[in-house]
Amino acid sequence: MLNKATVERLIIYNRVIKELKAQGEKWVTSTDIARALSKTPSQVRRDISSLGRKGKRGVGYNIKKLINDLDSVLGLNDEHCVALIGAGNLGRALIGYPGFKREGFICRLIIDNDPEKIGSKISGIKVESSEGLAKKVARKKIAIAVITVPAEAAQKVVDSAVAGGIKELLNFAPVKIYVPEGVNIRYVDLALEMENLAYSLNYRKKNK
Amino acid sequence: MLNKATVERLIIYNRVIKELKAQGEKWVTSTDIARALSKTPSQVRRDISSLGRKGKRGVGYNIKKLINDLDSVLGLNDEHCVALIGAGNLGRALIGYPGFKREGFICRLIIDNDPEKIGSKISGIKVESSEGLAKKVARKKIAIAVITVPAEAAQKVVDSAVAGGIKELLNFAPVKIYVPEGVNIRYVDLALEMENLAYSLNYRKKNK
Figure 1 (cartoon, rainbow over the protein chains, first blue to last red):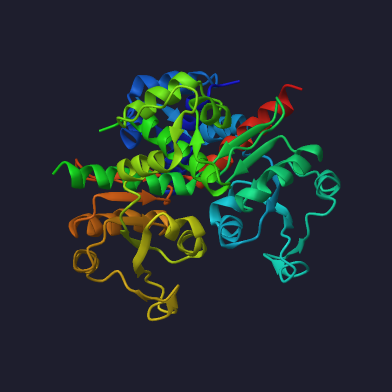
Figure 2: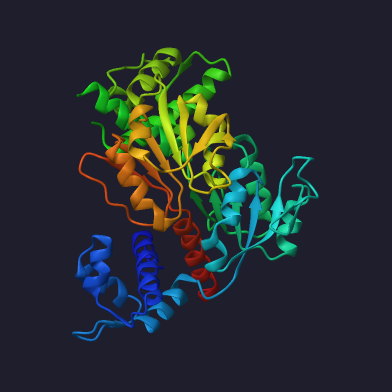
């Protein structure tokens, strides 16, 4: 398994190269990629060689082949069934995000316990309650769960999702979640991001 | 200035301790805090001593005083004027997030160039176009800008916000943004988070 930092760099390389492809480019050098990202060309070459691909001296990498390698390693050739657990503004923002579908993430299950939301449709998918969540997740072969419920509800829905077989989670609830070994949970903590800015702002005020 | 990792730990300590206070607790030990966070008590003591506060042997820290120290260092005693630049679902989710207001972040300016949104109100604030953004930001003494516009529009609005005096930005546009030295920009890249999960999922499939 590639380490996290390498995966993140490959994801960004892929983005940059797809942008170049959209502009009609056919070849890209490690220097081009590096420049777009404030990395060194040797770092870029090392990362790409970890995919088993080498550039040609002078012309670099064939963009089409490189995208194919990257999509294959990054799992972007397949579709991934996603469950959205928590159908508030944030959840709806994620589902509606154009990059979401484009990269193969297909929302197949939306869970919310608000009686006014249950039974309504979001992006064509009916909102269901969290009752029997593990079974719902297993039946629809959901691979990834996105957790946007309030902090106090998060652990319980994660437990059910994991019981249903989910091993990949993206959690927005601002609380530490316990998952069994082998389950991968990533955190996006928006309050933490804002509070980091408040610290920096406060430090500026006090030290100017 | 405290390093980033320390600031992030202090933010989380503050959250844990506020939770304990809400439960009626008056004292907390470094061991209690450490347990809630999978950190070591000595790490917690070291971090808290960087605020100039020491615990009492046996009883630990006075919660009220510790929260006061933390809020003061982290800039959470003051109100911070925020501009939301991009009033889509994600932007509205952020503004509507209960922790946002509670921690002193007050949205004072909402910018969006969608003609259907301009002039309408979100959370009581009128949506304005990005025309004259630098002046609007300066006039309202905005301290923090949250950028939720599409990737291709991001650099331009950031340039205007910075020209208007903003030094703290939280960017959700999945693109690298250039800011002058001394301006602090943090990235939340939701597509990157999802793609990381896709990689992990793909790796599992190939290696099971």
